[in-house]
Image 1 (cartoon, each protein chain N blue to C red):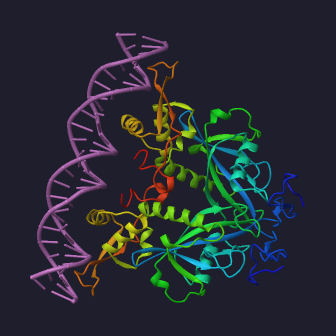
Image 2 (cartoon, chains in turn blue, red, green, cyan):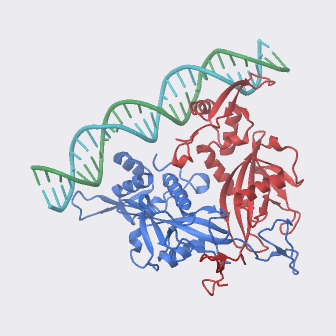
Image 3 (cartoon, helix red, strand yellow):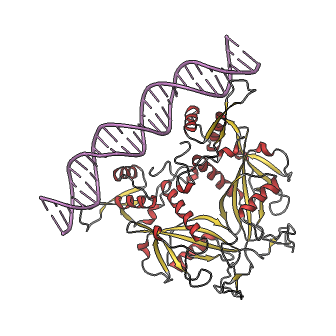
Length: 251
Length: 251
DNA sequence: TCAAAAGTGTTCTCGATACACCCATGA
DNA sequence: TCATGGGTGTATCGAGAACACTTTTGA
């Protein structure tokens, strides 16, 4: 076994492999790896985040983001899905890698690196079936202080979400399969924390190809029955490497 | 010592600490951690990337991004700076965390996770003093195929850079302290790989507060001496959490 | 018949685009 | 004096912002 850069312990070591000339790592003395997930939900005209109450030290009794430690053969994205499935009973969510947090003192137990993800979910899809009874939705503006560095992670996620929905049809993941134009409008106003002219918003969305009319109407309300739309999942995204649409969804 | 989630090896373990009730990690059997850096340089109207030729297996003889393994107490951002300083003799560059790459087979030696950064540099600042003689600039459109998953990392970085310079005054880091409007114009055309009307670009930049006139002129050319500008480093960034200016720098 | 929300249309303005022209310099 | 790039001005067009009116529904 050989440690490179003598005098400064590195996060790897090499073993010579006899079969071929490619050496291989011996996994040894590396920081712990974790995934933390900012789960955003939208319901009742409110953007919320799902938090777990810790029942172990450190930060026992504090609210934190759900997370897990990475499996030795596992990918971060899979660990993220595992958090959602195991701890929250959620499947098939929109998820995106956010940022990697590595402040050495972020976990008092020792060096732990967290690759943060965020997920978008329509909470009505998962009203029952939490595996963990300690999970609770908090409106983003009324959330408690979080343990670890999770306040920073959350803030980064919210900032990313705000920037994202302007250029990418991710926001639709927060709504039901069918939704009215007013519901979509309120969602954008809520996430961006601003007001948008209702009529200009409608025209902008309809002129784009993000949304398809269904001919159905939402009934049972006290007023005129609004038309129901659905997200156009066959939309071809243009722009930088197919990652972005041609222009902003709204301004 | 106790391994949680028995039957599925996790990337951490806990030791009870007797002094208080906070357990601590024993660093053990975790994937190797590395930092890889996409160094962008702009010179002679060309955007280039700095690559290193490997003289060890795996990928011996192939070009790769410069990188290092993370020190046990080191932060990724510091490791990134260490790459630039130690391997390339560069200091004080604009750097930004890009993405974390974790494909299990990305390194044939074993599980290795790479947190990728990109850096912007004016190559003329570092024409001499490479610590490594195997470093070479390649125009981004004439680069060779890279070892490991570094083609994917590079592509992600270029995509990010293109999106970034539209909304954030990062591009200035690629130019000299003083630059002409034409040089700035050519930089944007080069990175975005498009043509921009020279006169509209000038007005847009001057109407913004990204650039300050110096009263100096670039002399020694064969034509009219163009005015020199400098980047306005006291610019207050507005928008989402101070991360973004009010609107796009150009469209 | 009335309140409340949904749906449609019009005007105005500002910024982006597409241009043409003059100026300064060294060869 | 001329080629070359630098600097300035202007007309046009379209998208976005501001805003008013009609329609549908249940109470």
